[in-house]
Image (tube, rainbow, N blue to C red):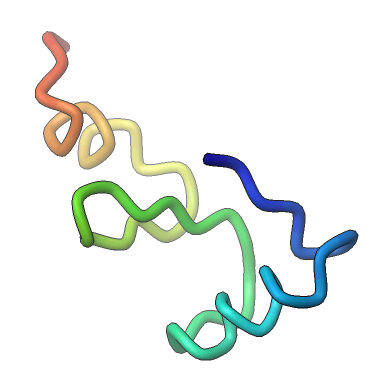
Length: 49
């Protein structure tokens, strides 16, 4: 699910509560991926690279 921290104050609070102050942050199966780390995202989603 995508959340827009600019438009949704609750989403911004959630991001800050998780300890992050910048975007993008993707949470995949409970693991955070900060920035665009294609290799890590591919591994977590179990996709072929």
